[in-house]
Image (cartoon, rainbow, N blue to C red):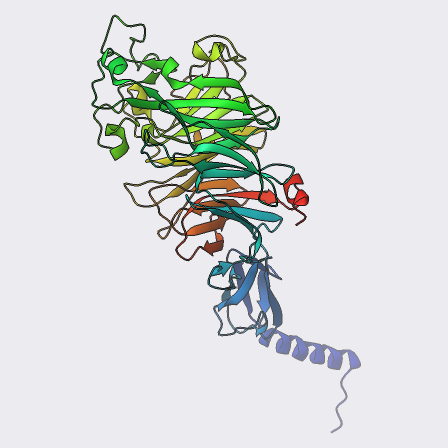
Length: 496
């Protein structure tokens, strides 16, 4: 029997079979790909949802100064990989700083991230040498002297070097004394010198070259024990307090001076003009803060303050000093005359020579808040985001772990309260970086920080606290390290 079906029925039947087959086929699964990267790099894709069997190419891209280490999630060391999606994956690209070793002096360097725009003036501690080095440890220029440094040296725009040098003076026996200021030509000739070394005064530790060409210099100044006894301060030795002078090298004239003795306060002898409460008169210096203290051996011998660093801010005509045995930084107004600097009025801020700000150790004005510093060196001003910062090295003797610390200062005016604690905005410490004496820190043009560890050498770190460079002095002790850009007048004048 010959059966015939209508065309439309055949088509309907075929369509039904096709739909049934389509309904029986399941779609391919999809899998998630999660991608992350450690600090120091990125990946070429953000990841996402992929169909089973789909191929995905991923590339790890290191930032400048970093290298690719490998992946977490797959066993592959290639920076560019191809994965075939068969399951959900979580991958992480790992990077690390591209650290190299040049030689025994440079055991650690990240060449792409160090500030190679200048040279470091490496000042050997109390010896007869200082030199400019680059980041490979190459000595670009060396000065050798006939006298020992005591301690600081700085380059002038004309390429000459100002330094403090040690002379014999049996009236002073504290570490850091010098007595002689010299200007040395690029060829090593002494072209100017000035002696401040006698029974009552001696230069020590630090000098600061000002924009006008003058020098600020720290001086120990003798106060007879009979005078201190009249205030109730009984000692077998005379006291040696801090004095600052500004000297003009062109004519050897002292054009300004400030003496800490003019600004002391004491609460032992009521009938003396210095009598008062240090907790209330915070712009004054408490004479008795270190009375009979064993904090340092020099205190019993009369060195009760021990300034070791001075810096100058021309824009505000301010001086900051590191006062080691008070664990403080003192700020004074340089816009005063010498006569005004003896009193408590006059100058841009109207306070004369009294302290216009101080911080580091609230106990010096009878507050019980914990002190910030435990021996400190080398303050320097840093301008950042329109605000004034101060960078300093905290030797941190008790904890045996030195710190480079940067503080955002309050605006310093005639009403700035003493007790306004500055904000800590940067700190670098390392378990391998400690020396209880000397050292310093400076901010470099690219934002890195150069740290001098006195018994080792130099460290360079970035704002994230990553170590980028170390200079090992191989047993040499360093007072400080200063940075001079290649484009600076000093370096150009030296022909480097």
